[in-house]
Image (cartoon, rainbow, N blue to C red; front, side):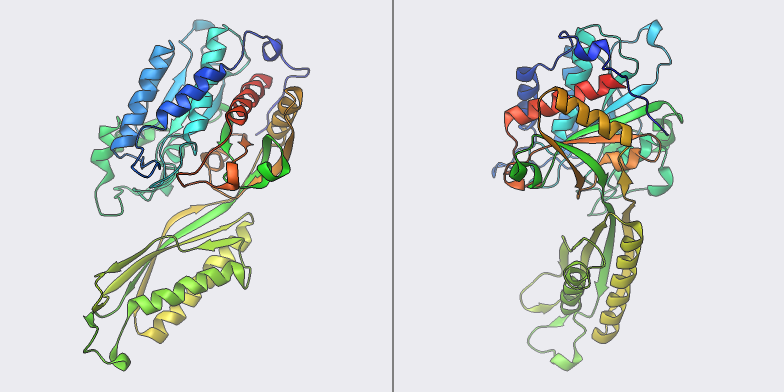
Length: 426
């Protein structure tokens, strides 16, 4: 898959009529940040939850107010384009977007900013009645985070036809079926294959995102040209022991899943901190059953999140942690089951799109640098069917997935300007 760039820049890219409206963009970012905001200032907008459904409904209204066509697919994705025209029928698409869902108590920009900027690009092109060679289409992918329903990248996997990676009857972390929640969001689990786009219909995918790290801010650069996206493996581990009274069960007769789980947590950390088999390794969720102060637990469930840019290292790290957990289970007298929740391969950004982002930033006078993404994004899923590119803007303090997540207004506008110009270069 290759991309051809317009050289020199297309007339539309230089036409002052095709421009981002900064006030409109920032107003949308702020208004969507109110949807799902909790008492602590964070955003609770987990995929297919009440706030997520509210946000997608507001996105539909916003697109209609802008005079744009909007529709949803069976996976719960929301797509926006200019009103249909005969002379654009069959034209290949440059897809622009991100996601609206958040982690629990997350930030206001992760995902939603990219959707607002994509909407701004489509609206700017429509208002100028421009005629780019590729039709810009904005997308809000469903359940990218997998915070409640542990099937991250749900929407992008469905749109790209990667249905084998999705379970037949998904459930959330408490066993609630996705089927009903998806229907409430306008989707249809039985028609999921209808969400897949025909091969070759996506000319390119561009995703604008906050960096979620400190590199751009520390360097004083405004734009990040993403070189690649880390691979990720997420395991759900169930450790089952034998419940007992904390005061009457002798230590030598215990089968304690929590002490076994604590050793697993340290073994996961050692993968990255000690043996350095992968770049980072994290246990982010630990659930103890029952969780009472005077009871030896019956079971513990935890997640293991492994990330690296090299697929071989990622595989070796998974093998190593599985072996370590097996040894710990034997030594502690507990039973162990391991299920794979996510296995996403590292993705490289298309070279021509990287160059287009860099050229656009240079023309707009924004300092930039090339850097990798340590977080996963829908772009790595779309890379299986089309060339992809990503644009980063600085994160204040380098933080993300927390209420303090923030980016300067000028940087938010700059990112949208680079996205617009890059889309028009194709």
